Image 1 (cartoon, one colour):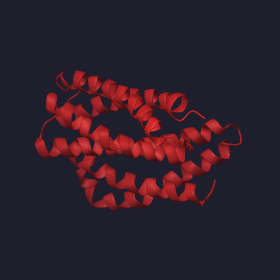
Image 2 (cartoon, helix red, strand yellow):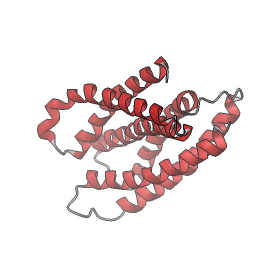
Image 3 (cartoon, one colour):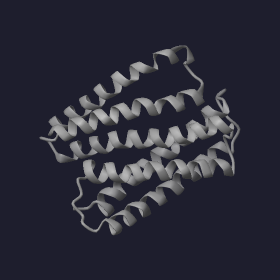
Image 4 (cartoon, one colour):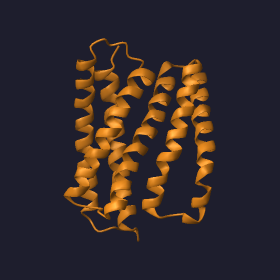
Length: 198
């Protein structure tokens, strides 16, 4: 572990803390604690550094833990970026299902994936690939399949009336979460074995 890993972990934690805010507003839960949101700016950088240190210590067992922990932290960042954009657009428009939701999801996906490419290339997988165009094309291809999987799950679940006494925005986020889990699993193996293969 070097200074770059610590700095990246701190930056990730800081960005993550701000990305939680639009999701929190749209879900409209625990609003009594909204004034304490600034504590996230302290808590998340500390947590991301701790995860990085523990993963580095586990690296002695196998490099997989180190790489997967970095992928996980970047995944949290990208997931929150994706969720934040989707939630912000839904919050502003009050649209929680239908074709507009697919458009919002694409916009959120596109920005999160550009971000994901650079974090995964330079930190998680530390790719030295010179042909950036070909590598990015592979990355985007794997990500588009993941996006389609994510969007189909999102649209399928939000087409059902909200269950468990959830609001439309909460139901949207349950659907997005289920789609995101499938998306993250697909992307990790696609990135590791196809895009950033050494």
